[in-house]
Length: 261
Image (tube, rainbow, N blue to C red):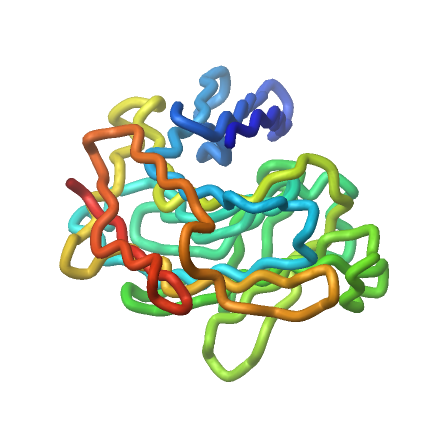
């Protein structure tokens, strides 16, 4: 399955960042770090996992990640995340820190989580407070649900509501809502900014403490959540820099890992 996305964000004054995301057998691009004025960058999706089912028959999706250990964490730039319809979320690495982020909120960011810098990309940004300084080995869950304008879950709702659960006992935290447009449901198990040059070193991910896709669940048209398992994904590896390992799609829920390789 191939999906084509066009993302454009305006940063400030003379700064324009163009993002074109193409998912399939070629790298996809999204969420660059804001480059110096006059420099454009796209970012590269090195590893992706896409849903093989009918996205329109889903009413929600959860993705649980385990944060990896980086051997170059003091200098690396990168991201791990997912797109559901036209709303992206995940964890974003700047030198020294992992932070929650979201991007692609095209219906306006008023009322979104105040810890997230929505002005960074115009349609979202990285987050602060409890949503940054995340630790290697930590698990967190991103939750998407069809919803109403009051953020009540509704399988016939016109919006997508996005939450994150840090598994810290505080439950899920609201991040953003958006209308549904582009029909898409896929993860980028690693995004690097190798197209931006040496100023943005790519993450070196430990294969003994890798990025882990811990679990995914999907919500049906009747509102029932179920674990995802079996042959529900297509796996795409577009670079020698990274690899999938310990892929177990027969587990319930299915799980896999990724690292440098």
